[in-house]
Length: 133
Image 1 (cartoon, rainbow, N blue to C red):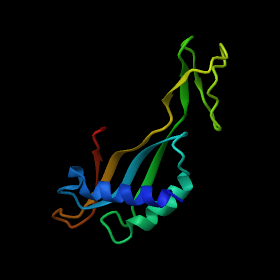
Image 2 (image 1 turned 90 degrees about the vertical axis):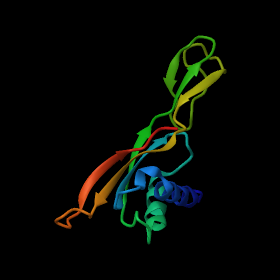
Image 3 (image 1 turned 45 degrees about the vertical axis):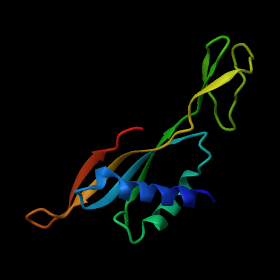
Image 4 (image 1 turned 60 degrees about the vertical axis):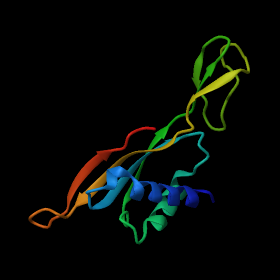
């Protein structure tokens, strides 16, 4: 169950991120998750909720944008959806030199914070876009 180590790493990355400075608690984390990343989304959500306990992410929602797997054939240039399990032979020329174009992503792309430092003391959502690396 490597999803727990991924969830813990996500919580550490968010709490140490410069995007977290000056904001209150984190109410949501948006993640791009590739079909071929080898991560089970439901397991990651469960582990994420456990990893967030007692941190500034306590109760945060994990929003997952699923990225389908795609491959490109080197010899003929055709592109196709790989599916799962992945089809890596070219459906057009039957060649076996495919390059994965997308589908292995595991990337935090945004945070939503709840600020509580306003004059009325109420919590207000604020979105923060995380820079891609």
